[in-house]
Length: 387
Ligand SMILES: Cc1ncc(COP(=O)(O)O)c(C=O)c1O
Image (cartoon, rainbow, N blue to C red; front, top):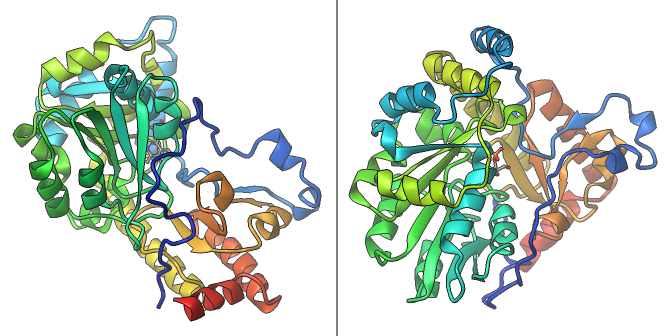
């Protein structure tokens, strides 16, 4: 078996109690100050699922030009960006809401639908901002375990839905496991979901899936059919604009967009962010080449890690997740920031973002050394023995 199965954190209990807030996994000063790191040479960020690649020159030039206009406020209605996105996604511009990263839009959704007496369903482990955002509301957080292959368990979500349920989050592909459910599964789920439940389909990693690389249709088309569907996308991951904080939401119609906009605090995209995102969409053909390269490199890395004896969840993202008992310490010693499992509801695992081929080889070398030292993969084979 080359894929692990979810067991250690699976629980059918309701909970955990949501905690307001969220800790970004950036290599903070505290991480950089860890013993041993100073000796490790250049520090490598493989903990926040960022793109290792700078924007293509055409995008960088547009952002540089936009800088010269920052004495003016941005176009808060993001007209030009919504226009090009509406063509790209096959939706109307009034179905689109541009956010300060999709994180802001997640907060907007929980604020809009997290009233007293309501319930919001998530599948664990998943992106922890959902629970963090619910913690700011009066809604009850209801959690169900993900499927054993690391994909969101849509049937378990349906079973948890009741009259009080106002919102469910479906992270597809799922962070931190990487599992992806095809469009047909999502469509079946939406057909079975009661109309009073808003489904937030978070596709932060959509452009990294094999389906996207192969030019398959995206979930955008489903917004026409399902008034309760909202899709979340971001320019942070595949397009590599994480530092600009820009993402978007696709809804069925302008009434949903207006409802969400009405609970929005004073947040707006920046002039440079708007220009960068616009240029990414306009130069989409270049990025499609990147999508194919990213899918190839992911397959190479996952195969290499499996060849070392590790179990790797099937992933359609820019990260992989493996059982790894030593935690992030061997990586930290090697100057690499990866995401330790206990911080992402997966104790005994690590999540490693994909970087350049050279970055990935550096991470594989740490995993290989751990095998030689009798750690890491040994734990994986022990798990296999128990399975
Ligand atoms: C599933 C998922 N959704 C949303 C986000 C937030 O992305 P953004 O940078 O657009 O706020 C992340 C970031 O890690 C993510 O993993």
